[in-house]
Length: 201
Image (cartoon, rainbow, N blue to C red; front, side, top):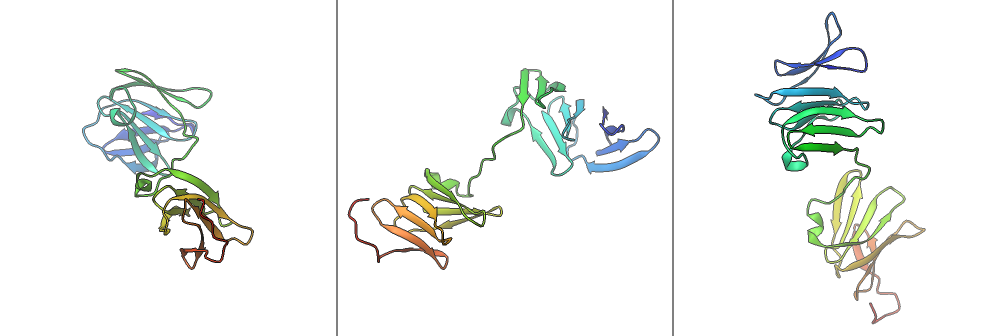
């Protein structure tokens, strides 16, 4: 069991996570997705998440908005035996394990990557458009657009794109290495042949 900030108690048992209000169950919060796990310690954080330290299965985290997740030796803990938990005044989470002390901080940056991982190519330029889409130019994999959680990849005749830009008329441009200038037209990048020819990249 663990104390909750609302005065009730978190209780894990019978493959369920529930809340006990002192005289009755006030909430049947979630199913417990693991079996044969020994919980060693529990803590509710200031953000409302519930942390469960285990004997051999690392740290289990219940977020009321996103559900369950887990941190163990495969993704950061020194050992899977979690002995103690504490939250400091800066909302950092300290995790005592059988293999040492770990510090868990809220991530300030979200890492974004398309399903093909940019085809292993570097991202050379980014631009944010008027519609909140983020455009990314790559050296060898064309142009990507990230909008409303979805990725779209655009082929460009010369896939070595060194710059991407939205102009004042909300048109998207892509500058290439040695292949000229392209503009997004009807869902594809078209070479702008009406420009003055240039031999330099």
